[in-house]
Image (tube, rainbow, N blue to C red; front, side, top):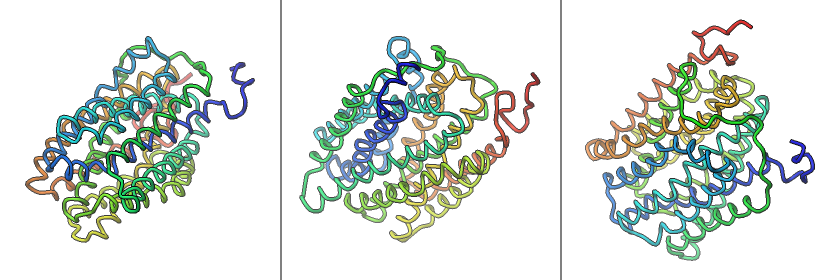
Length: 397
């Protein structure tokens, strides 16, 4: 703590969180903006191929519990930066291997970087941010990520529409920026000591059961959006890569403004009300996806859907309030694995279902949001250790 006090103001843990929040979207934004068109135009993918690729992408997320074993030999901050570098490298190589096996390889590489970074980054946020400020700062971090994703999508759009760049070069640029920012995070910031030493073993605690359930349903439901909503825009409505990028640009521009406000709203409302609002909205959005026949309304639903992602801050801050400080890092790894249990299965299996009826896929997403809505009602007004749910009682001192 004392060593941090002597550092320049910009060499603080919170600033490093913002640098890392800026680095990640250049790769993920580029990958997401191009992957549907790249896979169809360069690798001749159909819906089943895309489902398999997305399932492969989620395997490293399912294995996020292995972060705990890596933390036995490497510090969390170091692992976060190394993971960012892998994400950038995998993205940069994507355009160079336009085949089913090539895309599987580069997707696994970038996915290892992305999921391990997200696991450790979530842990560092919950450790470094005070409980009172966490929702607001997390909202600002989302806004920072959205601003950088906006820049990445701008690069994609301008590169495609005005300079006629190949997707190969755009993948190289997006991945390269993430890699360079990871190197800056490595060289410019000191190592920050842990406030509380984290447990270095795997475990599940009964009192965290509601958090685990919310995370599991979030992972299952998220796949419907990540995998199939974008694919719907390309396959059904014929969106080009530039048009998909414009839609992403709108998403990020809206998030820059609204994500900090959502963070403040969660701090004011509390987690239960915020999650209730999110899940009711998602039920309506998924049902509308199943029936939409207009490209304009499809794009509108996509933008609304993406906006609800910021509400997921409430799940993180709920856990921060009920968790023992030393449980944050190991539970982050376990929770990412729980989040990806369904994610490994849903893309491939629902990809086959997609071939029969895309509407059924989205109705299933609405059902998942309904289950999440029921679970959210168990979040107490003031979550604390000993009062993790509305049916549990605080432990008397």
